[in-house]
Image 1 (cartoon, helix red, strand yellow):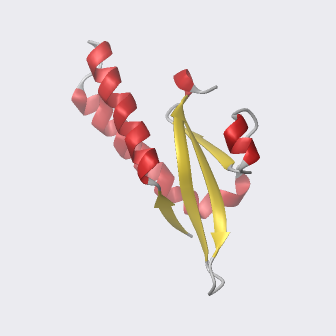
Image 2: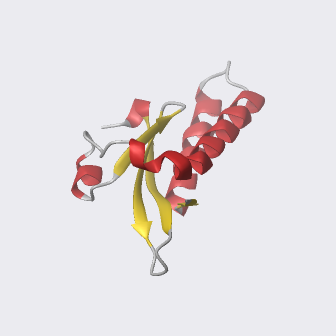
Image 3: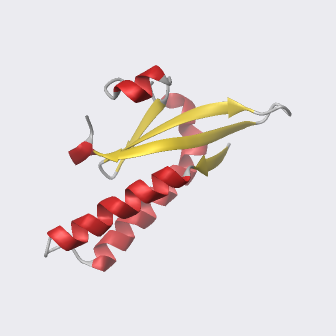
Length: 103
């Protein structure tokens, strides 16, 4: 399945790591770039395994929208699987939240 990532997700990742670099002296840009690269690789791979992850269980907004939840590199990702008019399926990642901020 093809994977589509909402702009909000990109912003969540960027904002978190921008803040992390500013607030943690030991965290360098190369380490952050490697983490971000691994995140996006995992998100692209989600198209293969999208059905194995459960529905969200803790974040009310995600539960209400019946999102599934995928966790990688301490980020929680909310996504849904859609069937297009031609019968093909896609994964759309709607939201993201780092574990430290997950409520």
